[in-house]
Image 1 (cartoon, rainbow, N blue to C red):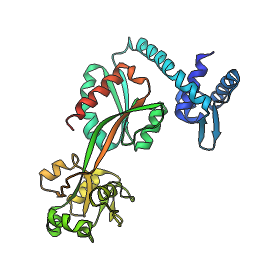
Image 2: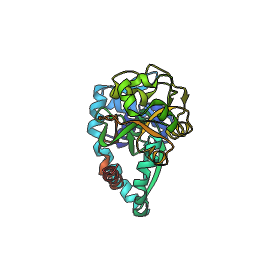
Image 3: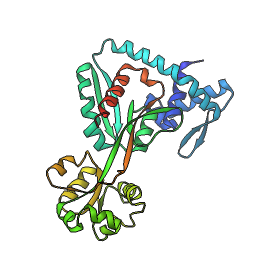
Image 4: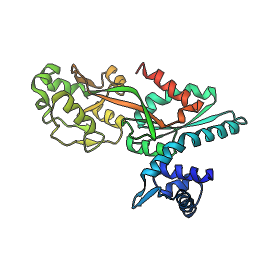
Length: 298
């Protein structure tokens, strides 16, 4: 069997579409389609079900991918090692949520540059990062969603604690944590809310965990960036739920105040996700290990 056909098959499997696979392989879409049809004729089995939004592997396709992927990835690693003999660096392609990646992951990985690991980072939601990882655009994804299936594997990285914060004047108006503990979310009626999305993802999780209730309100200000949310809160625009590490400096400077310290704080877990079998690559394994070590202090 032609290994090029298997490589094309695996790329389509990971990308979820002929179009994206063609872009990754540097081929035309008809060429990719023709190679998949040739492989299907050879196996006498359909490998994908075509749909309006891409392709879905059949049970035969799933089985072939799980059997072939480790071996093809190993061959690719051998080839890359040979090519890297003339190159001083290996490139790690990382994706993850913007604030966490900027403030946590990139500083932890920066020393690897002196060890010959080049780094390319991009930002995206959990869904975008996992899709990009599966399609082969990235080597390592930091995500708040654990991937399902055997194609991707994930390791728990750390837990992120969320805090309810507001400017000092709002803290004074609310009467302190004791009032908020006693009255619950009703104490915040009429207080503007700042959030990253109309669906209030962080606020909803906080309310459910701490108050066993839904927010029952809409945001007064929506800023699709956690730093922007923090700036609005510090300016007195209202209250928000933010990661504790993100607002630490602002709290130390007295710009914002933690409004409540519940006995069981809301947490969000981050995962390190890779394509199965790729941790055998030295530069990826090294970055994976460095992040896990750094996360022990987060």
